[in-house]
Image 1 (tube, rainbow over the protein chains, first blue to last red):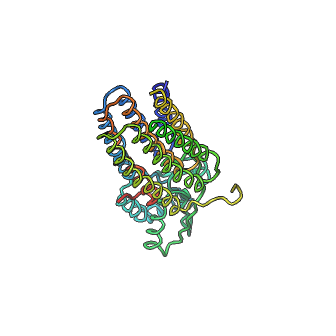
Image 2 (image 1 turned 30 degrees about the horizontal axis):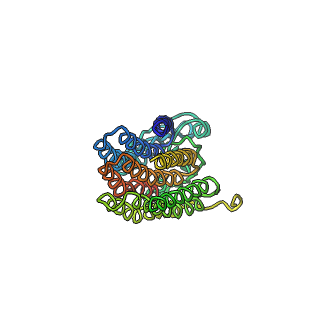
Image 3 (image 1 turned 120 degrees about the vertical axis):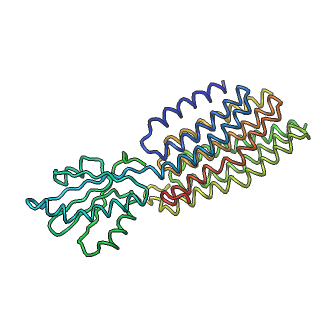
Length: 181
Length: 100
Length: 87
């Protein structure tokens, strides 16, 4: 009876860990999963496997997942401008800005992914999954980001120190639950 | 006689832990939950481990059980403190309207 | 021995109940709190199993958990607190 409870617990934890949206929650679920599976190994009379599971599954794997979670960041940037006919001129003018931003993101161990878009900015903000959306008008640069994104604080600080003379406005919009990690 | 005393201690510990589990669902905000969990878990663990040590008599295994108890007495408040500190420094605050 | 098996069963019920809090928990800290509680209860279960089956080497597993179990909790808490930096 007790054995069945632990086995059902294992199955439920595995399904929940697979179906969760946020990766940090999956790390917590996998920690609980390795705890329960270690006890199940003990119930079936394998204490050496249980010790290995306790050390590897509960401690080392959690540390490795957290390090990997810190390293793995694909940062998608949408770039839209509404300057009209002089699009090419502004792109050339702005390319050093974008290149410097990408170099800064690479230095912070993220992988920037730049997407040029011709759609108006409202549809991008509403429909796409973005980390940073840059909207370039005649005088100003509007930057949209998720309110809970902690990498955006560093980006804001970098932009304000290096590009203080451009008119940069930062807008934090509330993001839904689906935003990963 | 000593066995009966050990059974009594284990039953008291189970009642303590039941109160802790009820408190985990009864309270509505995180800081109340972490308060009830930290206290009740530690007291329940100490009581049930003393019960097991009495039950297993005076042997080599009893020393191991007492050593486990000592280690958990040190590490359990440490990790609870780390969780509460993480929540406080990350800016988690209690919503005043839904406060019980 | 029937008493100890009943105790193990009751602790298994507690683990399932705490697990509901881990899965439901609104914030990530609730999940961490549940993980901590499950870890303490699992140490108790291992000690009960060692007493029931009268194999005292099972206590070594509980000793390893008491030494290492809190490291993962503290690391995840530090990870959230530092917003991504664990150095």
